[in-house]
Length: 240
Image 1 (cartoon, one colour):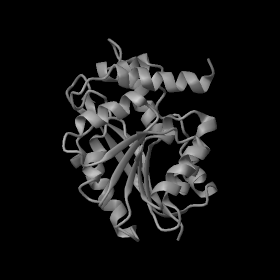
Image 2 (cartoon, helix red, strand yellow):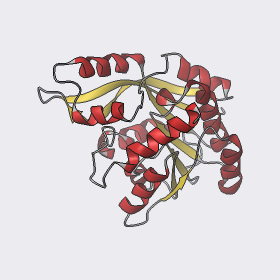
Image 3 (cartoon, helix red, strand yellow):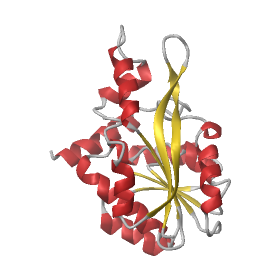
């Protein structure tokens, strides 16, 4: 089995062992704390609000369903077939569509763009945990899917988040249960360097229209009851 296959299997294993219960995945936070404020940052830069919104790395579709309330059409894509099935089951009202897609597969990404046309993109915490050789293709997928008319909101964990996770893992008794599940499946969050994400987006031909610091809200708490929030950077990208 190749490293790429192991990576895919790790995600299939994680989502295949995740139930339909909201918040079971550590990053499955309430959209009011996640996609909603992120869209408020993106909205001033959206050139064509009539374009569809694509949620890259949609997982179980929690954020995708919120995106569907702000754009005329929403499509969530994920590497994991199990994640896509979870998303479809959770979307009882059918407000969005979901498809399996490897963002590092340039041919399939190009085919999706040819089918949908330009779109706006929402991508939360995908590059930071991608394999190093896949990070540039993932940034390229963002550029391909927005085309010339779309805009992208990209938010990624920073190296400071890795320090938080390390501290949680090394505390007496080990990491909290939801974080333990992430490590148990061989997933490695917060691996990208601080300057890597903006450099990748620029190398993909995108202009950074806005950026800032934020925190990604988790659904897990420390032993003292305080919520775990992880340091992150956000970017709005487009082609001028």
